[in-house]
View 1 (cartoon, rainbow, N blue to C red):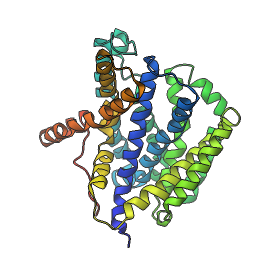
View 2: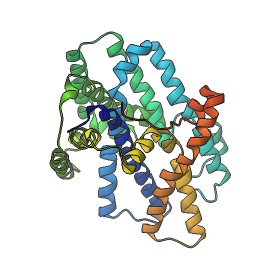
View 3: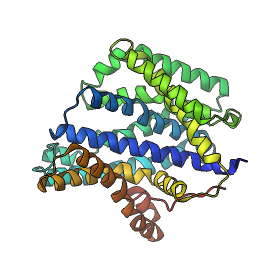
View 4: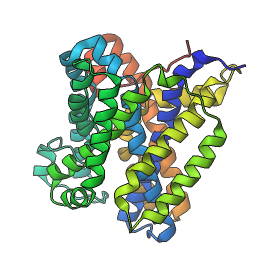
Length: 350
């Protein structure tokens, strides 16, 4: 027998998976920029698959409860809330991360100037682009529930944005190389369809659909296979592959795992806790991952496998040490905690 109440844990399970893949991809690229890893065809394929999936997944997850947020807070209330939970951490941690890269420029693989430090959040760079683009995407997508757009209109908007994303593929790829603001615009167009898809999939009527893990295995395998065939040919169709990966994994695997009737075990609790705190991991994993890489290099450890495993471990575990600090700050200064240390004690199924 399945417990539908535990479905409330599914987004946190998905966030745990997504943030693990984000950390892994950034550790890989950090090793490549440090000349510790050569991106041969195998590593390139892994990197390609990760980026085809993890950021679309986070935009999709952001859309699941988005309409309900607009309904509860109103459009302007939603913007105010997102300015606090998205733009606030973007500003604070951009200055912290770029400041550390400036101070430890001799050990960082990204050289920054004093100007870079002073203007760190503007425009959002490094991993922080996600927060700026997500805020802009919610500002646009939020107009649909704000004006009480019907489900059909929402689906039409999704189809139109997806069609534009596919039609503009070559232009977007070129534009994102033209400068930081063009990069942000490209990422906005690139990922807006997934936020809209999450809004549609979050509809309680559509959310009744249930999948089996076999769906995940088959559809994800087919999607990755088709995607690998398209690379270098019809790259404009890759968003369709990303959509298949996101829906198949969430509906066919994550929700299935969340619905199981067994009492939550240790793994389930860890996944829910990690997912609930994926924001603090996202904000700080580059700092901790780069720190681990630097320590290992100073110790004379250059083995790629060791660097990768310990880098991912540092990027995932060390940020969680900030959770008790953030909870302590929240008791005395809730707004400061939401901006500087957005953490949560976890979430339990209803």
